[in-house]
Image 1 (spheres, one colour):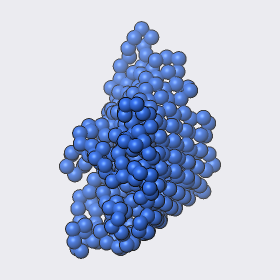
Image 2 (cartoon, one colour):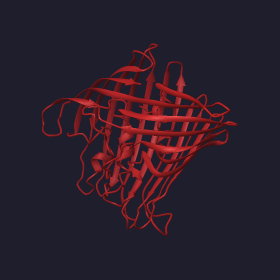
Image 3 (tube, rainbow, N blue to C red):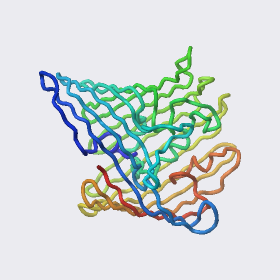
Length: 373
């Protein structure tokens, strides 16, 4: 779910054609990423022993999609994006909580792009996530990053995944269905706003989602976001998130800091939990092909039970080419003591893809390859 998949095209197989008397240019791009590697955990989820397994999505999700552009003239373009998510281990599609048959889980949208901005309709990335990943210490990488406290605190979806309420179009606060989004870049400032319709007769509030994101990119990068998810029955905000972050480059080194605050509520308005996530890190580009990252996360849970998870992650990405990267990452995670009132407490403070650490102190090592096409 990195920035390169969300706001930049991945160049791949081009199927181009010229149409119309004015020879308007149209193109459809097939693109994707396959990420696979070996994952070691010193405490397996099913017992006290260690485990080595093949793992999909070490630093990137495995995705595939089609992206199309048609030049309509006068600076206007018609655009579309269809993007699915799959497991490189099995080749099967992955669906969000409460969903079961999403061919294009990540994106399925169409719109118009002009000099005054871009308007898209359909399923798309949350603009708040797109802004926050620019300052997350690990860029919201698919594993061992700030992505999972973000996602696990916003699980309201069909099937009542959060235990507090439902929103028919929300998918872990990362993807938004039934949405209209406007985005624009004005000099160094990028900003976007998305509104997801709840689809409930007689109400624009029930089940809706609002997502706002903005970044400033100049001598430094600054991000700010807001996101709210409303219950489809009562219309009450059952999840509210805001975040702010900064990234400061200095030669080959970039320092990053990100803060995320999420309140989850029951449908009666009472608070279930507040999760505050702090992330800080340094990227060091020590050669033309190598970038090392050291990042730390402190995720505090406040509710019927108070807990905190702490993690330290050291990683290195080695670029064999513009499309192929070898990576290694090592993490130490102290999950702390988890309560039983909120069944998702451990998940809400976890940086692990797919679940919480199985022991209070866990070591995770991962090596793999990512190839873009």
